[in-house]
Length: 441
Ligand SMILES: [Zn+2]
Image 1 (spheres, rainbow, N blue to C red):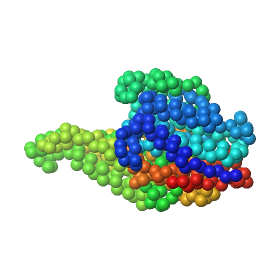
Image 2: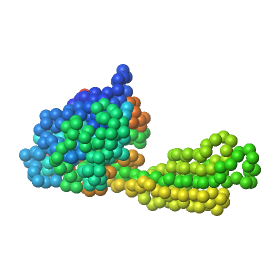
Image 3: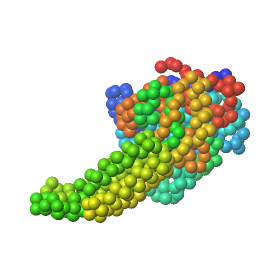
Image 4: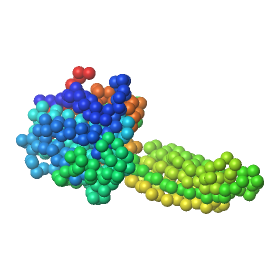
């Protein structure tokens, strides 16, 4: 008995899903799609997933915010036991790629089918989930379905979010609740990640660490925390010709020092404490922004990320010190606010071990890395054990029709996912599982 992921079946699923919202293109490795929540393309993608769930004998549930769950309860499983769940999302950014999201959903389904084919005997139900509006941009600012399911966001507030865009069936001003009802996916089933035994999400890496290492799969240790600071620096706008150098309070000259202070501190943190820390002054708006006027006011946006809370706090503290110094030395007035702050999210040690064991057994190379981007697993990790696995992304490109993961890489990562899910569902090596890659490519 062996667990054999079918590479061609997985490929067929991802290619079929890529048709919904397809961007016309002749290059077979540039297959973009636009699949935004609530659109007709989104309805079609969901309809196909539900049909695939039913084909595999899964029980289908749809919750109030349109999250989809397909559950396999094997004869061997305790119907009431907490399920092992895996999945991701089907929606995309405008003109996004075909792997970001769908790989995780269809890999989870392929893992279930591989277990069914191998007649493994799990102790627990095993389920596949597809979360609504992961990308945001149409009705929310991302990770919406998983935030509602985990109780982090109120469902009524989420359903009342409106679309500003008129796109593929979505009417401007339509609420998420209305859009889901229109496409037939405003359900009334309960989907509660807090009641799950374990959650695995397989996603494309969207970076080049795996490619550079030549590894098959990445096991994420921590999803980085993110802080945004909004800084204002006020000087005095004045005539660039008539104001002598000694009489100026130049807000942009002060802001230039601020930008370099953030860069220097981030570099120090990288050297001393944490090589994953980053600090970026990503936006500056100059007022009045005229060549012949000494700049009077700057609004700066700072993005700070790391896997360690302490190093993020060090960079925020440096930002405060920097503007205090500029007030003293340059006579500017400053302010700083921190409107967005998400702590780093460590992934479950237990599930990471299961993933590494599965990789070893399948003969796949797995390496530890961190995720600089947020994924649904971040929400789920707040309420139960969660794990995030990465498949290699060619050149790290994503959110772009050039996004690409070789089919063999998709299958290899799915091999590891299947083995890890089987372990968490009580299928042990003594049941004879050896995940085997069906190498037809
Ligand atoms: Zn994604």
